[in-house]
Amino acid sequence: MSTPSKLGFSEEETKEVVDALNKLLANYQVHYQKLRNFHWNVEGKDFFELHDQFELEYDAVKLQIDEIAERIRVFGKKPISTMAGYLNAAEIEEASEDTSSGDMVTEVLKDFEILFSFLIDTIEAAGEIGDSATEDMATGYLKRLEQRHWMFTAWNKG
Image: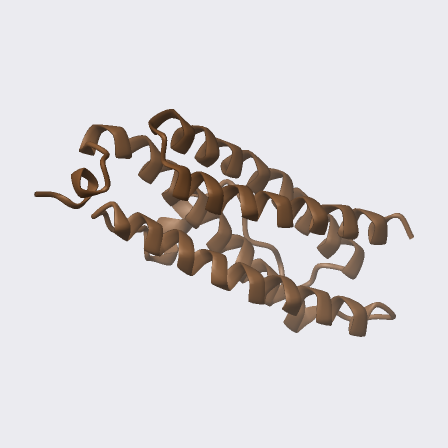
C-alpha cells in the first residue's frame, strides 16, 4: 500500500498538493539564501537592526523549509533538494551582495508577496482534497508572513 492511500488520499489527489509544496519549498529556499546574504552583507546606520531582523527571519524560514520538505515525504514523494532545482522552480530570484539596506528590505517585501501567492496555492490545493494538515501548516505560515510583511513595510516607510 502506498503512503498517500494510508493517509486517505490517492496518488492523483496528492499530485497537486505535492507540486504546490515543492514550488513553495523552492521559493522558501531561495528566500532563505537571500536572507543569509542580506544578514552577512548589510551595512550602514541600519546594520544592527537589520542584521538581527534578517537572522530572525532566516531562522524561522529554516524551520519552515524542513517542515515543507517533510510534509512532501509524508506523501511518499521526494522534495526538490538541489540549488539548481530550487532556482529552476522558484519565482524568487537571488540578490547581489552589493544591495543597499533599503533595497534589501524592498527585496524581502517582494519575496513576501511571492510567498503569499504560493502559500495560497498550497492552501487551496490542500483544501480541495481535504488535507487539513497541509492546509493548517500553510495557514500558520501565512499568518506569520502577514505579520512580518506589516513590520518590514512599517520599517520601510522610515
